[in-house]
Structures are given as C-alpha cells and as structure tokens.
Length: 182
Image 1 (tube, rainbow, N blue to C red):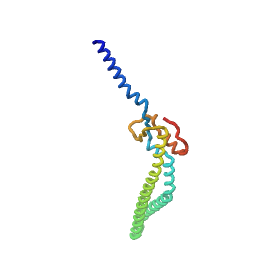
Image 2 (cartoon, rainbow, N blue to C red; image 1 turned 120 degrees about the horizontal axis):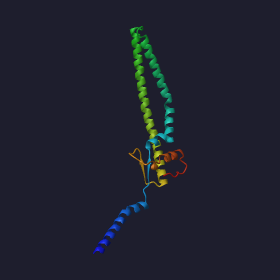
Image 3 (cartoon, rainbow, N blue to C red; image 1 turned 180 degrees about the vertical axis):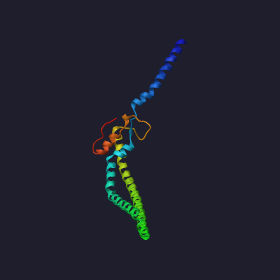
Image 4 (cartoon, rainbow, N blue to C red; image 1 turned 120 degrees about the vertical axis):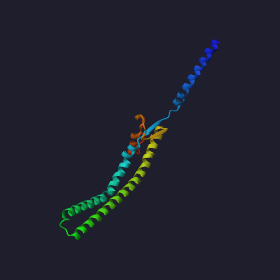
C-alpha cells in the first residue's frame, strides 16, 4: 500500500507540475505583444499638428494685430480722458466716455469672436490631423506585430513598450517602412 501511496503522490506531483507549466507553454507559443503610445506627445509633437498650429498663426495674425492696434487706441483714449477730463467741458467728457465705452465693447466682441473662430478652426485642424496620427499608429502596430496598443495616460507602463517615438518617426517620414522597435 505504501508503494501505491508513493506512486499516487508522484502522479499527483506530475499532474500539478503539468498544470503549472501549461499556462507558461501556452503563452510561449503565442505571446501577446503590447505597446504604449503617449497621445499628448503625439498631439504636441506630430509634424501635422505643428504645421496646423503654424497655419492657424499665419491665418489669424492679421486679425490679432488689428485687435492689438484697437486695444492700443483704447488705452490711449483712456489715458487722454483721465488726463484731460478735468479741463474738458461736461459734454465733451461725456462724448469721450461714450466713445471709450463703445470702443471697449467693440474690442471685447472682436476678441470673443476671434477666440471662438480660432477654437473652432483649431478643433477642425486637430480632428483632421488626429486621423493621420491614429492611422500611423495602427499601421506601425500592425507592421510590428502588436496585438494591443494602450493609449496614455496610464497609471504605469514599462518604457520598453513605448512606441511613441516610432509613431512620430513614421509621421515625419510617411513613405518609409516602419523601423523595428520593441
């Protein structure tokens, strides 16, 4: 009986060893390849985003300069009013005050309109570039055999799985084949 108990223990031990090693052998046959991509860096550093920001700056620069000139005119009017209001007639002082108030309201309205239009255009440019960024990340992941790409921010990631630089490189050089990077 003692031999049977020993054989049973050996059999149970062997079965446990197989059960413990089974998941390891299954994962060795098809490891899951996971990558991480930092979305903020992609949106900040992608050449498409840099170009769209420069394009918007060029597009809105003349209107921004005009607004700055109107604000300088308003500041000069206020300064003259503060300096000369004591020696002006009551009617002239009131007229100057109405002029200042009207210009102030116009400047605020212009500033708000400019801000709204800039935000709308920036969102449209970001959406357009985002599609290119996302497609580049997907193409790189497929070419390198990734099973999953996790977008940031995340709580923790091992820097060895960060593919952000490779995706940025692909965005900078769209015609080149994807370089191999873990």
